[in-house]
Image 1 (cartoon, helix red, strand yellow):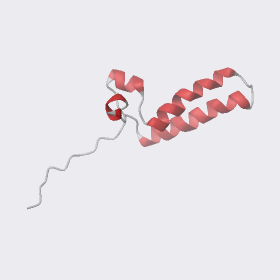
Image 2: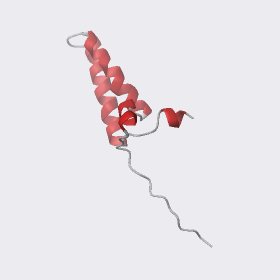
Image 3: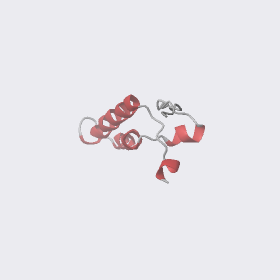
Image 4: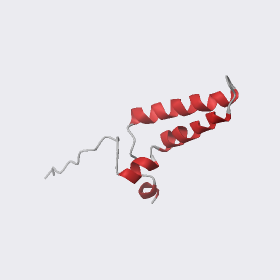
Length: 75
């Protein structure tokens, strides 16, 4: 059921980039300029960890590699 609400639609490399970007943005809340704008890092961090981007789902877009279906049967 959760896969219908949050389908995996991100490539594994994109997920990693999102997690790194989210952590980097969150770090500026505590280190550096110490601004609350760093809390925007929650968005890429959450989407990277979940593997699902709500905007991708809304627009029907996906960067997740398509798994080929194997229709061959062994008899």
